[in-house]
Length: 342
View 1 (cartoon, helix red, strand yellow):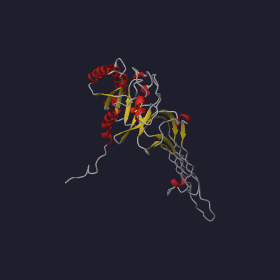
View 2 (cartoon, rainbow, N blue to C red):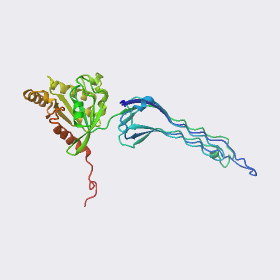
View 3 (cartoon, one colour):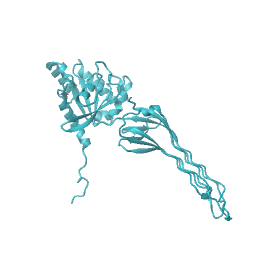
View 4 (cartoon, helix red, strand yellow):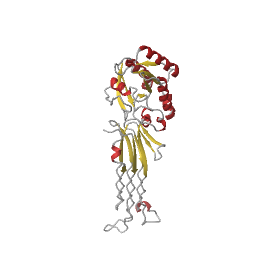
């Protein structure tokens, strides 16, 4: 299945049915009076977050969604049937934006969450509705209300507990493959990862989800490379894992490049807890590794962990560090919390 995280959709709710102008005609009934029914209500356009979806690919093949119109009213005080709603089933984590791609209409982060995007028009009143003591035989009725037509954008942001960031070929996909059942593409050239991958990892009997996104390069926030297209997928993460290639000659420069691009994209990403790790330590001698680790810790002002995604050396320590940042977001209030205490 192809991955698609942005789709443009055209929607229109149903128009209401017109009211009827009708009079009762029945044998032996001299003054039948008006009996025109009201029109039915038009259908709504609704978006619903469902489980089991992780892409918006369905909206590439169908972009127009129109709800049904309400039926017209009829004689004998019969109200027209309402139009059927149309439901857009989207993955959990989908943001719905207005046509300007900036105004957020809704953010569907829970399974089963629904939002009405366009309400159907009300049905018109039949002539029975206009009967009064002075107007015993009205011959007018209302037309139905028109439906709402609008253009929206669907933008998917994957739900994950931790996000992997780093330059191309920093070993992010290798780390994901070594710690989960995910099988991302791995090769010795840049931009092997072309779309985000999710993997469920476990440590000490606990499980959490990691998202791997394409690597960032200098100028990514200005549109260079493809990594900036997918930074939105890690905005929901509780923590970030910053992987740095230990075989690089300029590990400090590599680390600062990624942090600069994160800051240029959004302050939200820079404010998140972050675990920094030197990867591929199996390919570097101990003396060089010690020098590069010390240089990183001095430049970044944070502890740097050592690991190898291939040999899995140091991987458990990295996973435990990630879990320590994720655990607070998993905490649930105790039953006694919020209760009155004497």
